[in-house]
Amino acid sequence: MRLSAFLAANLEPVLVEWESFARSTIPATGTMTTLAIRDHARQILLVIVADMESAQTEAQRHLKSEGRAPATGTRSPADKHGSLRQLVGFDLNQLAAEFRALRATVLRLWAEKSRTAGPEELDEVSRFNEGIDQALAESIASYSEHVATSRDTFLAMLGHDLRTPLGALAGSLDVLGRPGLTEAQRDRTLQIGKRSVASISHMITDLLEYTRSRLGRGIEVVPNSGDLGDVCQYALDEMRTAYPAGEFTGEMVGDLSAQFDAGRIRQMLINLLVNAVQHGDAGQPVTLELRAAGKAVRLVVRNRGKPIPPESLQVIFNPLVQIGALEGDSDQRPSSSLGLGLYIAREIATGHGGTIEVTSTAAEGTAFIVELPRG
Image (cartoon, rainbow, N blue to C red):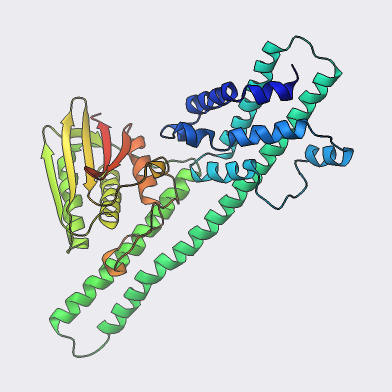
């Protein structure tokens, strides 16, 4: 059977293996649906089949050998595939691995059906390989373009997010320099200035932690014996000071002793609590639950509000990916919106040998669930 005919008649078995490979080797697919994993794979293969069955000039073959194709004026399925893979957290190695697996799967399944390999069949294999190479080149180009866009967006967000607390801090210093301030006015102005400094410090800390992890150094964790309940209570008190209009409740049950880095756990909790208050309904409390769970301790930060769409849950811990727009009074949001907080929370949980997951429904709200081993 000709390779192009075989491929057209056996798309489903190929797609099943494509999905199986992705689920077994690429962590980002853990929460993805079958539809999301396969996204444009069927269209990519159909484009390759159509190309294999069409005449090709030497000039066209040369373009494809260089990973280029004549411009069509529309985005190809492979182009769209690359941009979507960047969005859901694939890296370039994982993107390339998908295409290697696709190539190997098609050729293996075809070889099991085909008993001959004459000149015509060998030419089709060559055409198929050219098509895969072209699709991979288009996907990588699209992926890289979106990475560059994300980087530019991040820099714009950083400038925007720094401007607000810097402006508030400058204004506070100006007010404090005026004569005749009452004690109440001075105290209020000092509180605004302190919140602004805390906001800037939080952003800088997130940036430094993100840079460390991207350089392969990870987030340093130095565990010591302690009671996680004390750290949770400290984090709640800090949030109540930073968000006086918010409501924070805590529930701590059982033996909460463990080996942990108190500073890092506090940082993780603050990031989770800030995320909860920023994205939850203003009139609903943010809850922090801490319970003994055998050889582990289970921590849950929950808020009420609009649930996170299922397709967004898979990328919520990805650095620089924001889920939804943040709205409201910037003076009531001392934390940055760079999208690094949840990524750093995950790195801290992982650094302790623990796990972090998220669930989100209209009935139960959004919950970040952390399990930390006791030692």
